[in-house]
Image (cartoon, rainbow, N blue to C red):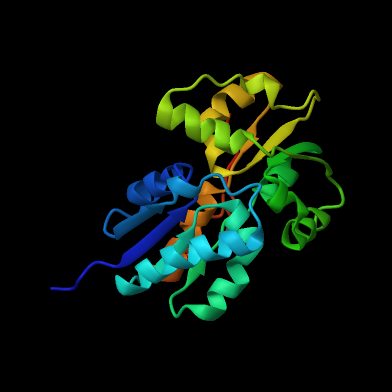
Amino acid sequence: MRLPMRVGVFDSGVGGLNVLAQCMRQLPEVQYYYYGDNANAPYGLRQKEEVVRFVDRAMEQFASLHVDAAILACNTVTALCARELREKYPFPIIGMEPAVRPAASVCRDVLVLATPHTVQSERFRRLVNAFPNCRFTVYALPRLAGEIERCLARGTMLTLSDHLPDCSPDGVVLGCTHYIYFRREIARFYACPVFDGVSGTVNRLERVLFGRAETEQTGIGDHHCPATN
């Protein structure tokens, strides 16, 4: 009897559970291990050296479990150290990026909400510059991921409007998996479609594990996803 594929899913906290849920829906035959680093969340304001050390612990755990692949279900981690991790570990490591491409394909004035590390990364700048026909307003939210983590884990109050910029985009990209818990509220706040990279990341995992072609709707890449609101 063939053993199931094993996949590790990592996030700085609870945000990656959104990715894990989609993985389980789309690829139920896979065995998953989830590593949420709640003790050190959020990562948005931490130094790169700290983040690398924390993520290394998770990847070592996944290596000891002989995973067939790992997902970095965290835009911040992908931006800071995905390349180094891929050079160090023998299994495929799938990163997560803001869903800029699907947003740019249907919108012309896009607001991107993300952590400071994601916004400041060269990887993100290259991604945004690839779509010159779309106007991007990029807004770094240094504390929202942490507030959402506390809201979900401890039941603290969260006033979302205190963190969101005052503007009128025709599309919003959620560049952090924590924000997805409030995607409906964000969609209502801006009255426009909201995009995230979850589906695209899982499609990428499916292709890596099984060589299955990704759907025409989502395209190719680890940051593509359909628009929802």
